[in-house]
Image (tube, rainbow, N blue to C red; front, side, top):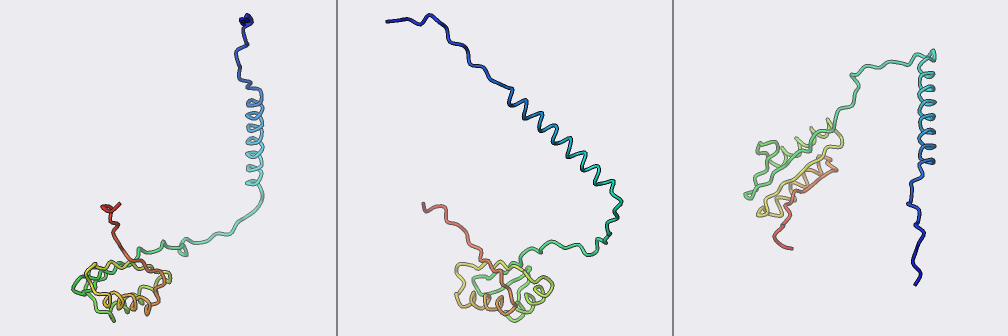
Amino acid sequence: MPLKTIRDEEPQMNLTSMIDVLFLLVIFFMAVTKFAEDDRKLPLQVPTISDRGALSAAPDPKVINVYQDGDVTIGGKSVSIPELTGQLAAARSQYKDLAVLIRGDKMTTHGRMTEVYSACRQAGIAELAISVKLDTTKR
């Protein structure tokens, strides 16, 4: 059995290509910086605007609670179905894409929940969500 008498060379990392890439990046960023400075020196006057026309953020969704006894609340105040429709329509007139979250008790009647859904539809609410709780005990 022949034994190896010549030792293999240790592998070395060739950094030449990485250094080339770094130099190219440095040159690129230097050139871009120069062009950005030239753009600022152009004799150009841009128009100005006031900040009064700034867009406002979307409002939080309206939360409607439907309790077991059929009581409906919005914003912590008890309302009837016609009052709910009026309040939602007024809120939608201020923000067209108003979202509504309905939190119904699991023991409330299906009929009462349907009345709340109908009130939302009559008010023109298109974005409607129903709150549920995930059951983590059954897996």
